Length: 542
Image 1 (cartoon, rainbow, N blue to C red):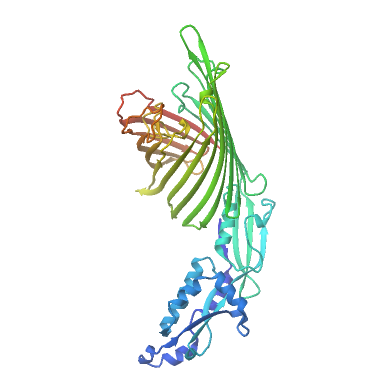
Image 2 (image 1 turned 30 degrees about the vertical axis):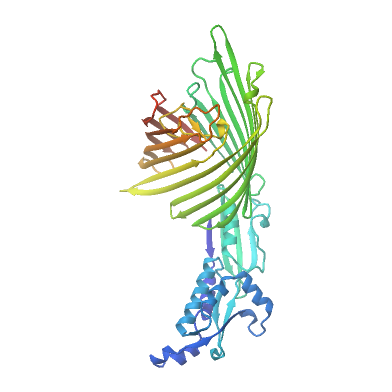
């Protein structure tokens, strides 16, 4: 995203400096000697009016200033019923202009004109910066302007509103979006030019082969496909497929895991709509003494989220939202359904997220509350449950000599005090939880998971874009779970379970490919166990 302000716009800003400076008659009155610098004026009224209607003030313009710039009254109150000096008035004007800039009104200025301060009234003139012409050069890549920009010609120019709309377009990585603020025919007007050009194909994908599946069929492959801007709405469609590959001699038709999902997201001004459909199939042949039986399961999930950006700027981002979902799940032994494992669940969630970005550093906090409604089946009564979740994340780059390092840390906390299904509980063993405990399915209603990774990137040889880069990495994790609400299926000890593990790895990157190898190891566990230690993955990106 590129912002460009016309050169002559700066010239116009300098021309309006008389609005920020005090008029020359102050200089003539107070610059004669040092003693007269102490002269002040008793001020009991501070009024605001538009510079464009200097001769004919109306209540409408004062209402516009009061509603659009509510900070004016707050700042002015601090200077009422006082004897104001030249320095005090200059301080007030500086505060007004700096506050206007922080709120996005980059072409609005506050100043004063010639007046009689002995009247007890300080009259502040406002040059309200407005939008002139809007030149939207979408080149066929955007359907219509109003979807992302709540602006029109004649509106008061607010950079934050422009940035929000541009950020909707820049989420499409295959497009290059630039915005220019240019001078217009009038001092208080600025023209807006937004240009969208294609810089790459809108289709991208990734294929991964790894041994990170279950202990029964640990080899798996993943295919991720993404199509950007299909409806010219800055929207994204994503397809995800995950399948196990049993290389241990078992029949693939009777031993498999398959997961697929279809996701769609589209921004509408400050709103973001996200929808996801997921379908999963799994089967496992269970050998008995003289024969074997086939266990099969299938599930369908639907989730939809609506979030709203309360604050969006380069440093701070605050969003809140609501989500709705449904889940069905069925399990079978041969042709017989396991009624006790049947799930019919409705869910809704509330969430809030704050992200702070400073240069390359990034910190985020996510708060959410999920409530589920389990419907009854012939073997089990329905029940309700609530799952509050708090997630923290930090991304901290650093330099070691000439090389770049990255430290990432995340803390996930789940606090539930009621009955939960297994897939709603918090898992602490495995590749994506506490490393070193792959295949250990320990989960609980309450849990805390802390993961840490440090990577150092060494460009080995070659030139961009074919440069080969190695990144040795180290990871350290801790996790704790506990069941606060005991049920017949609770098996955790009264004091819960604490695990600590880690790993060392090496990653290699070159253009469209990357390879990872990791050795994971347990550091602390209350139970002796044998788990998978060596992991690898090979990925192709395009």
